Image (cartoon, rainbow, N blue to C red):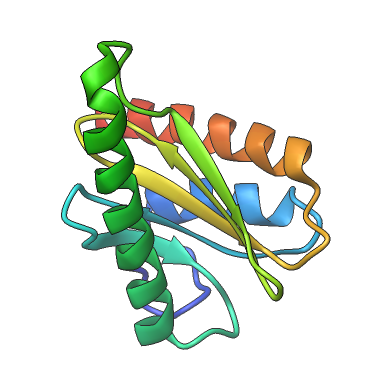
Length: 129
């Protein structure tokens, strides 16, 4: 994880920061493995523990969606969006069970947030190689 919350100390955090800063209303982004363990994040002004829990919970949701949709032989979902009253959460798969998350304040610019998160997922995948 980034050494100073909101500081960029890794290529992963730099990718997340670009996605957050390019998305109006974005409050943070994270990158996690298939178990929900956060690899890195960029979310200045938010409690790191809260952010790690948020990231892990949405990893559980992604795992359930993969299980549910795996029966169709089309593969798991590439992304999903959850719109809550106080936060919008966008989750995009990266590779090998890794995923990226972007959280925004409503009203979320859905199309732009998905676009920025897809770009971040591609960049994270490239950085993993």
